[in-house]
Image (cartoon, rainbow, N blue to C red; front, side, top):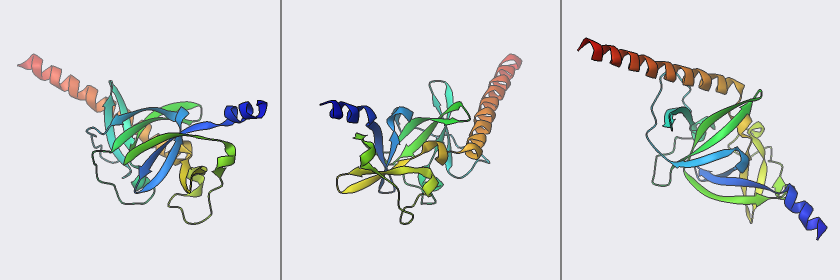
Length: 183
């Protein structure tokens, strides 16, 4: 019985979701929430894989399309498309971002023995983006290392994007208030 308790302690939970008909997983501790796909405001001069930003309870949250990030075709938005709000850590700083998922599947428990090393071939994702492959019966889910998928260079772009969007909104507010005063 003691052995079973030790196994439960090392098991971790992962949220599984689909991108371009492949199943992926993120450690549940990185997932803040899952929201319905909403209007994403496009922002000029950002990488193609950053779809834009959303307003999440007054906060500017960049939205990333991992299918484009992985070099695949952009998925169309459907009834099951959603945004997984994740927390990414780089250099001891946490950033909140949205990741578009074609559909969220389930939360799974995986023990370390159920996670295999990714093969050096056959995946659409660069190996440094993966923690491993989680066994799901007869198939696997690619477990993403979300910190590496959204590395420092990308986060710098996102931070710039957030600052520019906030500045644009404050300038718009200033301009609107000025217009109201003149009228």
